[in-house]
Length: 177
Ligand code: AMP
Image (cartoon, rainbow, N blue to C red; front, side):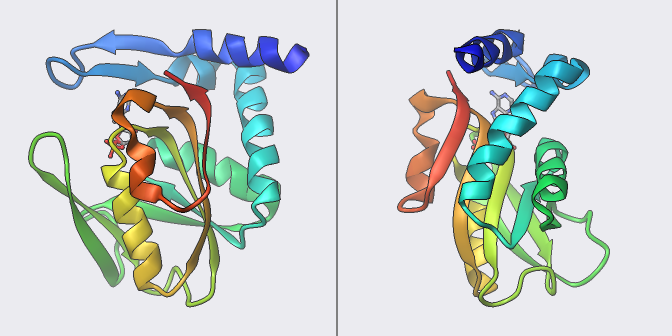
């Protein structure tokens, strides 16, 4: 009962910013959630419950808002945290994956020694849109010989059907728009 109300408050706190970063995109701004300690804690509690059931050994967070949730969850679950970053940000040797954006392409990188064969990985990001980013992350995890325990998002834009890129892996989001 309480939980449904909290989920609704979380949902209502997401701010729509039209035409950012480019015309036609409605940006889902999560900073009002981060700024409210009760809401942020509720989001972490709810994501943490799902994450724990997936029994990950390591959490991969995606640059940049995936770091906020991924790192906090890694602390709660006593998992290692691995940053997956946009091209050129990681200092050591990397493996990388180029993927399609709505306009043009982007590249995601992870340190070569960060993910090991047989690791059980939980992928975390703030938002699943087209799933291009998550699909690239899944490729990098696969190239390292690791297993995806699941993918977890605060928000899913269901009309873009991004979860098709994660099929058949367990994909979960707290809020659906
Ligand atoms: P995609 O690869 O299309 O699934 O896009 C996912 C990535 O882009 C995530 O890291 C999101 O943070 C960001 N993103 C895409 N669309 C939006 C949106 N409408 N609002 C906020 N972030 C977005």
